[in-house]
Image 1 (cartoon, rainbow, N blue to C red):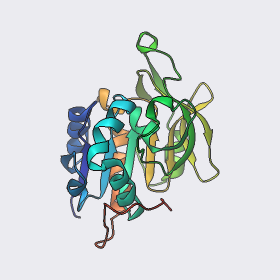
Image 2 (cartoon, one colour):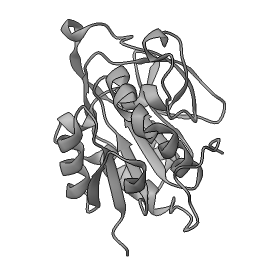
Image 3 (cartoon, rainbow, N blue to C red):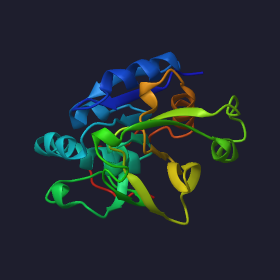
Length: 221
């Protein structure tokens, strides 16, 4: 079986932690800072950090529209915390992001820092029952998943085509819409690699077309 070729958006945030997690799951990984570096990738992680800082750093080279285009051509994308915000179709408190491109495509509505400030950060354990329902071939999902929430976004709405894979206090915290996966928290900050393994397996089913043109702006299917 071919080794998945994955990238981690390398502008800001928990980049090295995601690289190590994906490598531990058997993927070949590189950081991505320019549109040309998306070429040949089966999947991309958009890490946690600060969504406004990431959008501003990406703007001069048109990186986020290029990610959107590559996803539209078949590349899988996994957004965590700030990455989830950049994937969301609707951000209710997006004033700080106005004038900057986001990736979009994930039919959810989110609120930035919805779980509170840095001082309100917390850890908890999540049931992954929805994850096994999304992929019956997935194994090792019976144990609770440790989750680290740091200035995390709250998902306030999910579209009909979005699968909720885990919840916290009644709100979705892991969602999937076809080749897009997103989590409100930071899975890279624990030793549990199940979400990263799940994403790696997703990428095996989401090989981009050889004719993909990352610079083209397209709407995700």
